[in-house]
Length: 324
Image (cartoon, rainbow, N blue to C red):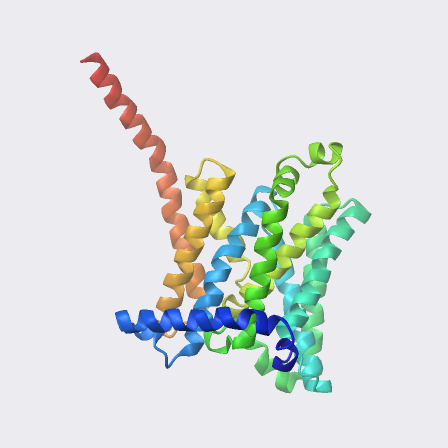
């Protein structure tokens, strides 16, 4: 998608949001003097915005996936998104179409998500079989397209493999805002149905709920999350944000809703700390964010182990007071 095309609709809709975000961070810079959000580095404004969006939508969808034991679907779709990026770069390099690789990644990832479900339904195979097939096919397609035009593609593909804060353009930030709206809006409208299918698919089918359609909705939303997060996380690490914050939240939460909220908090914490550390250390943002998320997960596991001990100690104290 070129800016000319985007300005016809989506770009104009979300551009005021982007401008408001610039203004807010500029005011924050004047209050704090923090170099990270200096007006000289507007690319960081966009990177932080994209990161905060990822911190919401990744655990939002990841919570459903983890409870359905589909944690690895993010990896499969990330590899097909890689193929989508390669398609976009190939079309731009060979035919000079000017299409955004993120848009071709969205299209290819959504198609791959549907293929995972269709293969499982048509062959009665387990989901991990269909995921492995789609993952291998996507990565193979990507490598073939890169090899056909190794000159420009090999250089351009690196930012998509590992993520790059400085390459988050205004156009890409607008794409993320669009994806964010679609994902959050869809989950808000279908939350009860998705919960029913997640925890008791058989009962949902018996009640007349179109389970297959809701499964497809879930995998398509996962594809959108993967493409959105790919900008700063990179294809290789994007799946981690679907799983790690959720895994940490389940250690200290007592319900699905609580787990969802806690996972978003943990993901946002990982994103903010990760972007800050990567900026000052000159390291890759995606890798630092994942390392921070894993560190938070370890702390959550320890906190989860300490909760029963604290409860036991409290019970003993109450019993002691009662005897006195």
